[in-house]
Amino acid sequence: MQALSRLQEIIIESEVPIVQTGPGDTVYAGRNLPFEVDLETPAGQARVREYVRRLDARRPPVGNLEFSLLHFGDTPDVRRLRWIPWLQVSGLLLTVIVGFTMIRYQRRVEGERAWTAMARELAHQLGTPISSLQGWLELLRLPADERPLELGEGEIASGVEEDLVRLERISHRFELIGLETELKSLDLKPVVHDLERYLQSRLPRFGSGVELRVDVPDVLPPVKGSDVLLTWALENVVKNALDALAGRGGRITIRARALSELRWVELRIEDDGPGVELDIRSRIFEPGVTTKSGGWGVGLALSRRIVEGVHRGRIELSDTRGGGATFRVRLPAADLT
Image 1 (cartoon, rainbow, N blue to C red):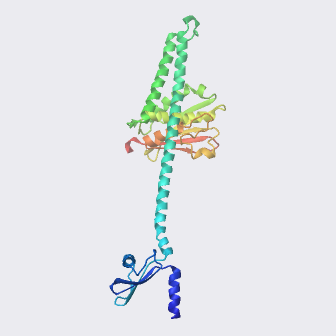
Image 2: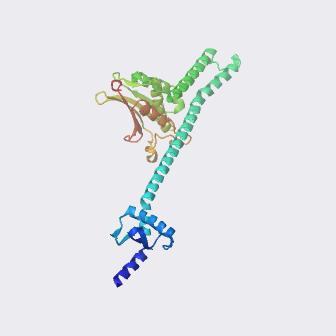
Image 3: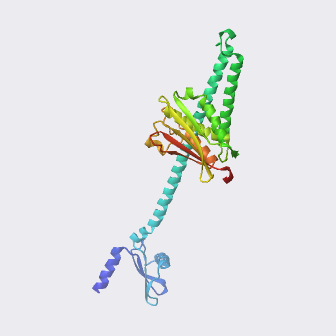
């Protein structure tokens, strides 16, 4: 009898809901019910019987159906534990939502930064020929006897034509960036030599004491590409090397070689400048990253987009023995694309 009394105390202390019923679903007693009820009333009996049906749906009662049955449920601690998986799932969903939101925000910020840098780059590139055209216009406004002796109307017209060609080239380049580019079989030798002629005429302005060398073999597999965009990509890389040599002079070498049994063509742009600092090497092709105090960091980012996004190639920065920097541009041969 003492054991039964102790068992009853344990059940009450554990807060386990338990109901005793008899024949005809008569409720004899109830402990730890989640509500107050008077078992002496029909309404109280009906309410507890409804509760008993919910308990039996979770686990069957114990006892003898002819005499007495015990119906029991879970303790409050167990009921609270049922919420843990739902809380975990909710936390996971919240983490995923926050993660996606942060990724979308970061991509939007990067996109806005890239477009801002692109706009500044466009303004920068347009500024040079526009300023030059303004200069030619000022010369034309001068009386013929006040102009420099070596500048006649023919020379001025040639200068204006050159600047207009430059403006057209710039607008065409930026137009191609947003379009599906049609690639064709392309010989790299004339592309590199056109770039060489353009740079040689401007080396005095880009940097004093800079020597440009070009080493392109006569026999080189063609690549499938756009001469306009590819020239732009290479020009940006060379200008990066020119910036590194500004004020100190040095040498820039453009080499071209066929790799892996003519499957790839590699262009190397090497300089003997101070090299690229370690803290930005891994981010050198990201928009906004630049080694110049007044730069916008869009040139190399454009080069990567042109080489890798348009031409399905690869551009990377390699170490150079004895200092300097080497940019390697790999392009698939035309017969493989």
